[in-house]
Image 1: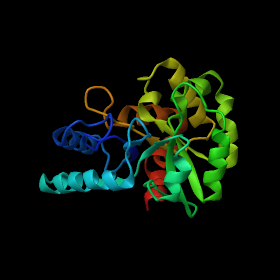
Image 2: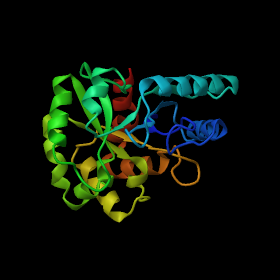
Image 3: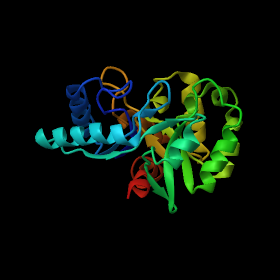
Image 4: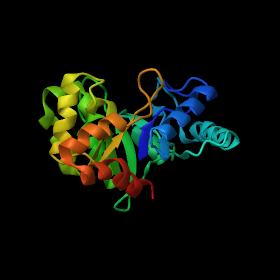
Length: 237
């Protein structure tokens, strides 16, 4: 499996606190059948003031430690980017690391606020698309506006956005409403990627095993494989 959304880099956001924590998360991911992971620390001006430069420094240190400790996890570097007014400027200044490509367009892991869809975010998405940047919208099933009215994600899908659902939403960690929303989006074939969105080892671990079990019984082995391996591989190829 390939995990395109996790907060494994140490001391850079609300994920791993120390390098030891990060390495332990990497070992856990390997044990859970994840062979490749893209680390995606938050970029959220005023809260997590990360850019490609400081993310790369921590990423390279992490990669060196993986090699030193013989932990066979392949890692890549990107970011989870919160919708914000500064985003176009940051894109123009090349401050954002991208996940990879989808149909020859760069893929940005884009996060909405958890409780609403901001006014004007459709215009921001349209602007990104004009720059050949495809938003992969992170965990829409945990956005309360979408949970209440799932059809609110449809205009973004129609524009060409991709969706990433959190594995732990599928297995019920974030409650019945988010689980229902996640499963419905997946059954309706709107989801491109399943990822862990791991932050630690005590609650939000780097694992997709339980979700995969649920999905295999719901949508079958082939479609589940697309969500956890084939589609992520296409993006990071």
